[in-house]
View 1 (spheres, rainbow, N blue to C red):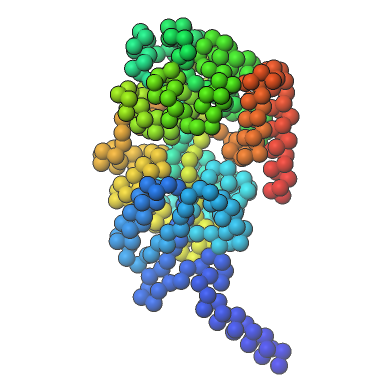
View 2 (view 1 turned 120 degrees about the vertical axis):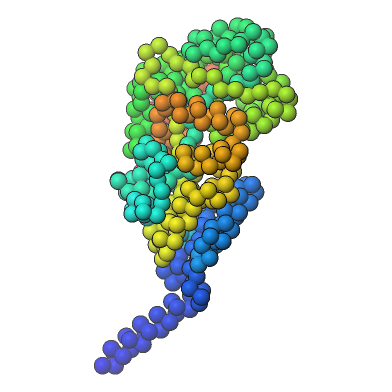
Length: 434
């Protein structure tokens, strides 16, 4: 009897202690006496993103006076470590902005976050294609909803090309070799020198991504060698400067801010659609215009070759005490006109077609972004594997590409090293996840 009394006393003290804490289970929120509930929303970004998101939160709270949203935000530095600590301890926010590759560590089997399929009556998914939503799906569970989608794109300085008689864009890579011949010495039609650029070419020829969903390499050594040989051909023909030239001249700076881009010597570039706005804004200051030509192809292409990836997915905590309220907030920032207008384009253009329409009607989409929308919609790309975003894997393929680009290794050795070192990096990632 004494033992039972003692157990009951301990249990009672534990309950009282939990009631006195803000988060006994790690991520509970203190609800107010007047019936309001509090949910948390975490994200990273710059000042513009913070300002727009806080505006959206304020609009949501005005429309939903019984729900308070606690904002948790900062710059990028240290944010991923903070998220790892919170998720491993079960103290993550109710709604979170998540990077595409984080799911490999935080939810490898799809059980790390709430399954958003359960909240389809609250969250309107009609503006998302099945392919887009698949990017946030793991083992049939919808772990995240992408805010946007990035597509590899070639963009050019239209005025410089017109100046030298190029008024129509070539539709093939060999066509860009002809463009290079028409430009003055020291001018390059397109700057590219990364492994992502090389695999776009191989993706065109094979119709497959470099890595599959499990991190396995889809390309043979001969296909990789062909990709490196193609890149060298683009350099030798004057389409692109060499990797050494880029490293010596541009370094690690954004090409968008370099004098070589602003004076037109780097007439174009190969990058993601998400960065087009910054390039366009900088170029406008010189009185010139950025434009998007068709993505060039090789003969017998099996896909357009422009790899794609989702950007900044939104996930919900599986530990949330107020999942319906969290889902309601998520739907507000994704679909509600007031939420969409407040969020604006500080995270880039939403991939949600319903949100795009709201922003366009409110004149919040600039010309280059409209062109990017048309380009992305018309370009049949291949979704990039989550593994491509992991630092260990990126370091492996970037270091090898740099070595090839400066002439330290040939294409055969580069292809061989890509397979060996990327496989080793994937194996290391998987071993840590167990």
